[in-house]
Length: 293
Image 1 (cartoon, rainbow, N blue to C red):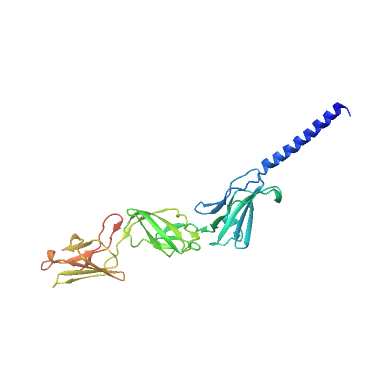
Image 2 (tube, rainbow, N blue to C red):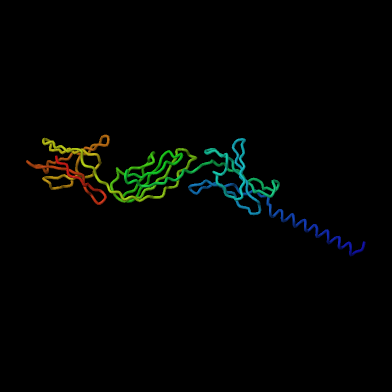
């Protein structure tokens, strides 16, 4: 064998070795067997999601959920999945969750990430609220699995009220402009509170109801007025001349309000009295006639 042929053979062998090395390097580059970082859980206020670090050199992602001796496998083309898409998960159960990268074959998958303890939870649906002018109430359809609702309001005042029904009456409010929104809640830890509903603006005009009765005790000169609403002031007519009274004794029993007014300072022989709820502003009015004592 000539020297020239020997050199050709040596160079051919070296070229083959380099080609094989290139293939191995390419394989190692495309399928790094390093396990992904630990799975993360998060939500957007409506959906619960699980996320693993992205690796575009692999064909997909595998999420593994382990509870006792049971294992649930979920394969995905993306590194973020919705928990609700995984069949077999039980709300309130705590799983060990890990993930791996999927290669072109099972043998080329990466190792699994370190497992995390994760309790499967869900988020209640957001109420869809509206204002019913006939019933003077904020209303909404019942939210599945909700145990109660918190009604928040702002405007001329600010606060919140817990209710268990799917409506909230404004009858006890003073009139005015307010904005309302509602959040659904559950007593179960694995059912998180909903996102706030879309706010609803309400311009409510409160028309006070007429008094039920009014009676004067001429010995004590105490005027007793009975009504169906709590009032901060009463209009007292003395010989048809109105005066605002806010100094009185108030008693309440089963939704009936009794007001006791001392009329001694304005009493004289032959005087006539009448009473009515007040008209305070454009949102709090009384349009009826005074009740003559």
